[in-house]
Amino acid sequence: MTAPRRLILTHKRAPGDIVVMTALVRDIALTQPGRFEIAVDTTASSLWDNNPYIVPLKDINTGGRAEQIKLTYGRGLRDQNHETVHFLAYFHRDFEVQARVRIPLTLPYPDLHLSPEEKATPLVSGRYWVFLSGGKSDFTAKVWGAQAWAQTVAQMVSLGLPCVQIGGTDRGHWHPEIPGALNLVGRTSHRDWLRLIYHADGVICGVTGAMHMAAALQRPCVVLAGGREAWWWEAYVRENRGLGGSEVAQKLNVPHRFLHTIGLLDCCKTHGCWKNKVLPLNNDPSVCKYPIINPGQAVPKCLAMITPDHVIEAVMSYYEDKTLPPIKALESVVRYQAAQSSSTATAPALNLQAQWDREVPGKPNTQIPAANPDNDIYDNPVIGGKYTVCVLLYGPAQFHSLHMRCLNSIISTCPPSRIELRVGSNELCDETAAVINRLVDHGIVKKHLRNEKNAYKYPVMRQMFYDPDLPITTNYLIWFDDDSIADRNQQWLQLLTQAIIANPEAGIFGADMTLRLSPDQQRFYKTRPWFKNKPFRLRNKAPAANGDNTVFVAGGFFALKTAAMRDADVPDATLTHNGGDYTIGEQLYQAGYSVSGWNRQKQFIHTSSVPRRGASQPHFGTVAWQTTKQAGHE
Image (cartoon, rainbow, N blue to C red; front, side, top):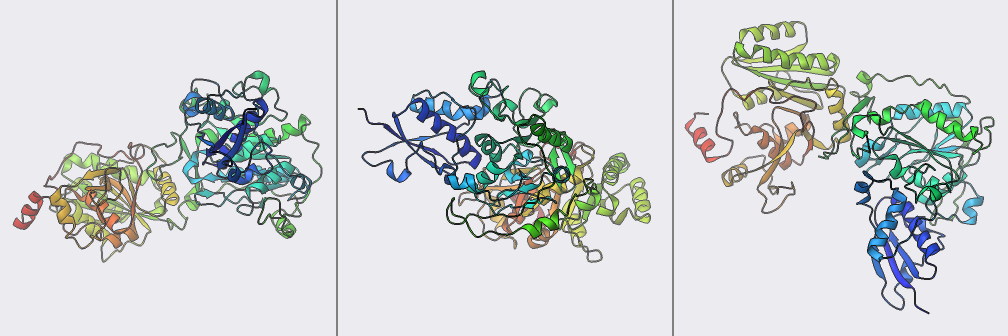
């Protein structure tokens, strides 16, 4: 008899991927009995507990080395754009390529195994629905709005359907707490998730691991998908030929309700957009085309099109078609037991009746009042309620209309109570000065710092930033050159605020760039008092001993953390007109602050809206600049 072929299947990504991978292991065992001996080396290893188709990893190499196959589905993200294929079937394809053995998909769902104790003993008593309100911060485009979740949960509870909120608290995960739900976020293991889902009426979630768990455990699931991913790549529905063909797809006993918007917007007209972020974050260029601003959270338009009523209708359909038994009177969640050292060990019961009674005192009010974005978003402690906006105007009467465009675009798009507007000017025409005087009289402009001659950009910036008579007291300030016009998106300040809240460690936000510094500039920077001996960067922005680049944002528009401005002494006191933007970037880096990309495509603020004008000087730190400076001709 031929010895079985020994394999170690590895995959080190999200738990949802591991759930999907279980279908491949099952199908290898079912279609190739005795031909393979399989161990797995994955993240979320507890998901393999009780699995009859694998051998322990520590035993697989006994009597000879096993082959290691690193499974991936990366090509499937491209293939699904032009063919109907489900994620569940793609590990099978990759296995065929690497192991040279074709394994068909036998069942249209993953393969998870609960112990008899897990099946017999629910963690939460009574009937309930499980939901996840958030996700991972690197995929914010997959997350529905917290306000919509609140309305949905309120309606669910009013119908006699208590809700249990789960989710991870690992780094990079966030789950807004939803009123009216029993909150178990961060208190449950992956085995607890399986147990909670197995005993639940159903699950409500985005495109995430809980959806795949619900499919494996044959539980109802309402999926808030939007338009990021094509429905045929993710949906567990009988109409999906990507699930191994129509014959296999018909074996779905409990099809999901997959709420998608593919075909309803130009960005997801024929397939998913696959964007990662709703708003720019951490220099990720994969950003939603149509962000919708909600209080404290931006949501992709494709998800905002899905309403709480859509979700409730999908939930109720499981009762109407008798997948689930009829709803009874409101049942309280009375107990939660947390697993300890192992997936099957049971800790002493933790009584959460008091919490439930406090959060859901009978039938709740289903009318969740809409929050006022002018209050909520800017009052986030990261922002502190208000911005200081500094605008620099330059030039004779021929630029008066440009000055007005700039000022009007700011005043008309910013809540007046949320900005303190300051104007600096060089050689300003009387027409513009007269308008600014009226704005000062009416309290719209806090102060006008006027220079009759051209004092250049960065000396005036420094005057405005360190004005002894009017110190900046806001957490952040925003800078506008006069040729930067806020006319691309009326919600630009809210969008910028969202980006800052999402990345509060960054020192500056703007159109990020890199620049190679000349040897003269590098030597000069090292003489400046703000230089802390951090190595310059490579082109990929990584610090390196042989680095010669600096990372910065374009100087025409940026948002700057006030503490970073002071810590780095921005702008350098010897700056005049050219080279200030990248010097500020280096100052911030040396002080320990990062750059966050925003407005790269000028999609929010139209920077450099007219040809360059005014002074032009040698760039800061170059030999020509140093010569000019020493001669006193700056």
